Amino acid sequence: MQKQISKYLTVLRTLRTIDAEFPLSYFMILLEVALQEGCSLVDLKNETGMPMPTLSRIVGALSDKRQKNAMSYDLLRQELHKSDPRRKALYLTAKGKHLVQKISGIIAQ
Image (cartoon, rainbow, N blue to C red; front, side, top):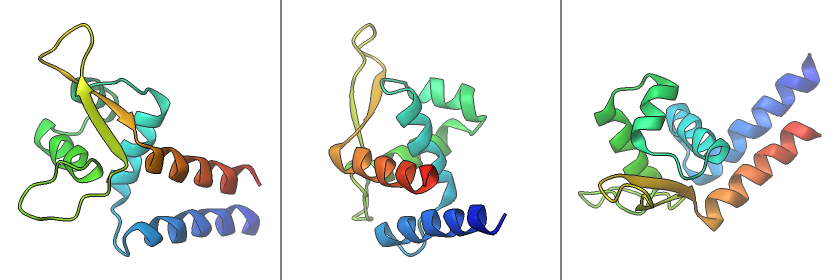
C-alpha cells in the first residue's frame, strides 16, 4: 500500500509543477479528454455530471482560451466538431499529451 500512496503523491507533485494549486477537477477533465479525444462539453457533462458552466470554465482554463488575463494551461485545444459545427471537439495539446504520458508512466511503475 505504501508504494501506491507514493505513486499518488508523485502524481500530485507532478501536477504541482504545472501550478502549485492545480485543481483535481481540472485533472479529472484532462483525463476524460485523454480517454476520449474529440469529445464535446456535452459528452463531458454526461460522463462527469458536472454543470455546463463549470465545464466551460475548466476547459477554458485547460486550453489557451481563458478570459480576464487568467492563467491558461495550454493542455487542451478546441476545434469545431466535424459533424456539427455548433459543437467544439476537445483534444490534448502536445503539452497535455506529455503530461498524461508522464503520469501514466508514474502509475505504471
